[in-house]
Image (cartoon, rainbow, N blue to C red; front, top):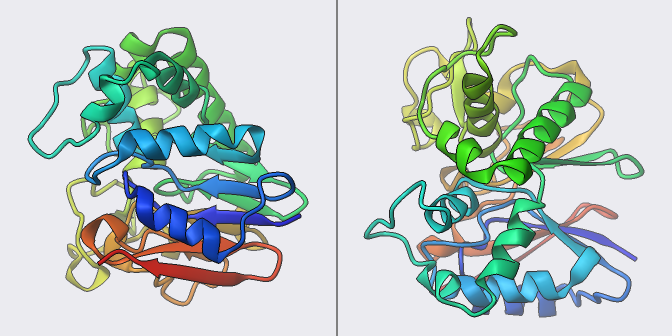
Length: 270
């Protein structure tokens, strides 16, 4: 048995099929983690959803911002944009099954035997592992209990800084933004720079990648994440942080990582 993690697929079904063949994934014994953003921007979101869901308990994903956008559109909280390509999911006869399955997926996963953490965007440096898992559970419970209210609360860039005194809607929004949208934050006060999507070299003054900020709770654990294609897999020397979004949907590569022996595999998406 092996545990694999795969970076943001974003509807790129053919590269996913080729990558699974390359790693010789066996759903009878192996397990798959996905870094979120299974859907959108690519050409085959429905096929990706169908394939991942077909693996049953052998595959799990954390929710990414595009997955949440799909849920928001389905529930009438958001509208389709010109860039959205998950209409094939929305018109599928199995759409209710796909939506129900997505709603059950967490924002953070922890595997104790592997000492491994999975998240789409990142972990707030001031949060311990137990706090991150607890806030993930808070959001997941709200999403399953009342998806419309929760998704409405999830949109917006404010508050940009954590406080124990945030109002319930603000707390849900901040949790969602950290786990599904965060890239950079301010070195001194931890304010999120949610509007920045570029590479590290062009970052605003005094803002740094979240994983360069110290967090002793994760020093001995591997943290696998996606979301930031501009990194192209570069962890900036932080060896226990493993960025897996290598821009497959932008005609770059889809990447897999095997926890057992720290091996990477990639396939091109020309």
